[in-house]
Image (tube, rainbow, N blue to C red; front, side, top):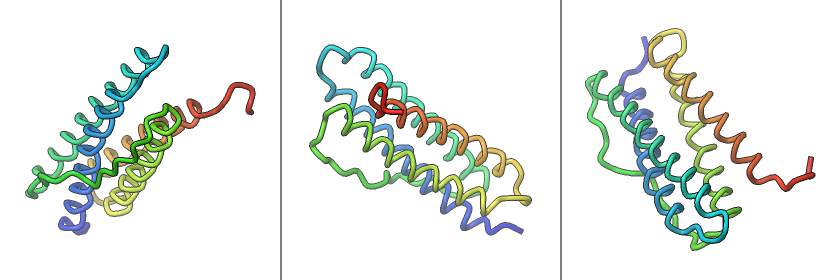
Length: 144
């Protein structure tokens, strides 16, 4: 049987990381300037909204298991770098770390807690797709 305490712990890590994503992406959206501002701000705000949705999902799973959803957010580092490439690199690091958290959840629930196993797989898929999207955004035309 899966260790419910460890599952709640990693779900709280996921929750805290997603809440930090809300703050991170909202901040980034306020710091974009230049002629491409409108579509980039829209994308960043969509990411903030998605992070809030993901945080809510993790919190629901925590309370379903009888745990207590954390009121914390994971560490936020203000790099004071607000160029689009800098923002995207920071986003990539944030998303890669969160993908690892979902993989830990998958390891804890695999073949045992199916609803959380499927949730973890779905979130890994979303995170990997997001990572690929950001990597493409960082590529320069003709670089491949």
